[in-house]
Image 1: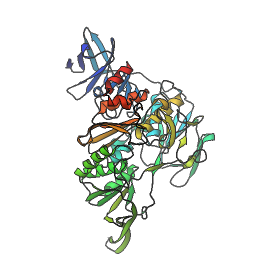
Image 2 (image 1 turned 60 degrees about the vertical axis):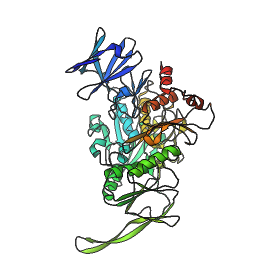
Image 3 (image 1 turned 45 degrees about the vertical axis):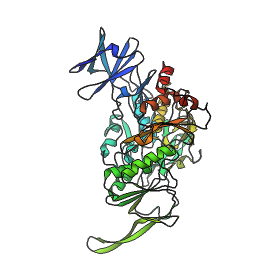
Image 4 (image 1 turned 30 degrees about the vertical axis):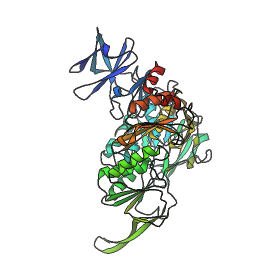
Length: 548
């Protein structure tokens, strides 16, 4: 029961069980979330600060409130951020007890002032303006770091939400300014020196020193008290003749996305690759509705074949075909062909230039195209650290530390999480790395190390969000529940076919709460076994039971 008057809302205590939570939608579209532990009640803004999901539709496990959409996690006692993909905690409201009711005053916030008084005489240099670099700087300031922060980025833009490039931005559903992390004034508001269009050409870990080059090739050395290297990854160029010609694109940056947007208008588009980037790009361009045609070429017979089963893959293919996407499977591209055109420049001279004419497959087939987009994976940018690590990733500890005061994180880091030591190229993992690194610099032991966390990612295609938690080497040992064709399933993945083997990952469309429950069980070391799932285990109840 609720009764709202202006900025106050009255709620019945009996609505909320001890150890539980409940959300209340208001007429102004706001949401109030109440958590309860015995006679202790707390009130929060119930919209996830990441994308606005109703947190009451998520799951509470112990003191963890988990968002149903992207698994951002908050402390039920004070709203503080425990897990990204959100970058800040929940706003807490004052409440008063009135017998069997609570009155929440949404105009009065409970705020804990954080003084910027920690490590005031130190300097932190962050190399890389992606998710890991941004999150490190942001969490340092939120945690009270009072020293100097310099963030160096090769990009010409302040940190922005890269996953949305192949989703909402390319589809024409989100403007560039909405992608900026922390807003347009994030750096100035947080007293962060943002150095754009600059490249770090060398990192000297033993000296905590970097060599910086600007666009004019001017070189500068800087030494830090804390050095954070988060250089990200670069797209792979496959060994295809013509892959470097004009009209062939990769999608990694804002400038890449802008070029693809402009170049694809009324053009025949060929996408090489059936992983996340390939499928999201096809979806986004189809939704934008500006291309002449879209053809996706894959070497295998499935899309996202290393992630989901053939049944789920077929459902995704069906979804794309319904939107007009053409597929060519079991195909290898031998050459991207070019065509010479004559262009009348300024009405004077005819200037010849080369552009894409199509792609030729190994079997001799030719597919006409005006532009080609490569979705053929990425490689970590480890060159500047090559003296101390192998090309497949930088070996770091559970706090992302390479040397005392020197950290390597994001796509370049091969670190130990709950699933073992691995390098993972997902946005949420990069944000986790930033949280853990900031806590390590601040010597804050209240923040979980990477070993207490699990990977999570999602892909958005035609408004359908496929979410995946954990890590499996293959989707071939699986249990599928539900119907992927109706976008209502959850699929569990195992390392083998043993009845007592515990699931190491799961994916879903439409069963978000079950995936949250699985994630919490996996995090606690109690993922369900094949036998338990086959016997009809209630995974949500199991997650609740283990968290009480």
